[in-house]
Length: 226
Image (tube, rainbow, N blue to C red; front, side, top):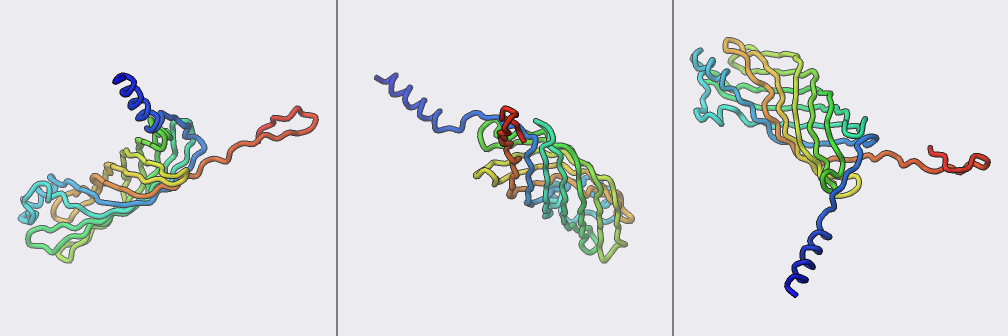
């Protein structure tokens, strides 16, 4: 009797849990909107600033890599069964303080294009994990009333990973973590990391491909697809 109860409970759990699934990526489009925080480590820059007599006014190592805000929009199209073309536009902001100078403001924005390795409904129904590599132009400005401003256009590189979870056929929530590489020069100090680690969350809208329909043409035997 106990064995029957155990079997019944296990069977119920398995039936209630999402089934293992697997859906091809090709032909599916998606648009994502979101934002979050960016963390920008700058140990080298802080060391050079201290040597120049302008030490970072925050002593703790984690705090010397300021947290800033960022926003992003992402456009993807499934070109192959496991591969998606991706175009992202982004913008980020942070501020930092050096001894003897007024606060600095760092703003980064630009666009990225690349590829994402992804699969829909993998390994469970509704889940869409991905890994990507992208590159593109980024414009950075670093300004302070105490120092000449710096503006630079550069080639940025990004590696990212994340996942979306669909709660309807066309809507999902997503999380994304990426490392964005880019550097700008702060006058009289050194090069400064203006990319860092970006944490994002937001909403994704999916655009499934239009299903092909059978066309029954008299004299051709029917079953033509279009």
